[in-house]
Amino acid sequence: MCGHAQDTAQSMPEDISAVVFSMCGSVLYSSFIAVCVSLMMEMDQERVRYMGQVHRLNHYMGRRQVPLEIRNRAREYMEMQWDHQGGYDPDPRHPPPPATTAPPTDSPVLASTARFQFRSPHGAPSL
Image (cartoon, rainbow, N blue to C red; front, top):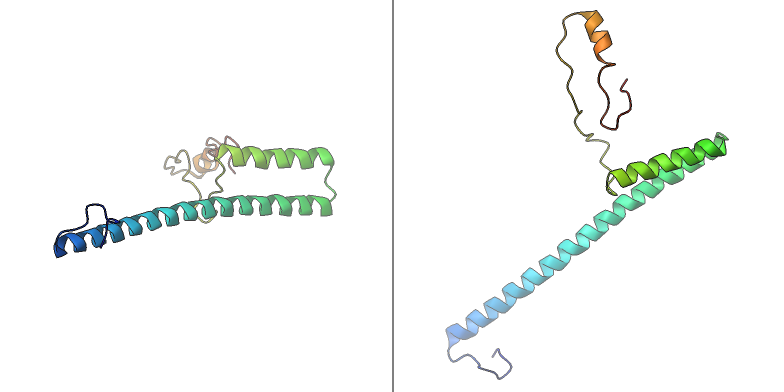
């Protein structure tokens, strides 16, 4: 049955095992292809989301007549952020955890000044 006339099976259990192994190989190969296609589609989806953000930013700055120098700086910032994240746009619904946590304070004065001591993960002051 299997083997293309090269060392064909001599008994029924050998035929069954050959068919089972062939089917398992086909399933593994197809699942590998499915995972590869899924990863490529996900990467493309992130790129499309990024390009949409750039397009919306360009449209907004054009409507508000933002000076060209500031437009270029905003685009460079978005490109730098994209490169820094390795071409990955994190889901805004799940922001990364803060780099540091604020110490517990009992005094309202300490609580109001403590927020200026910590910086966001990208180095910009947090508000």
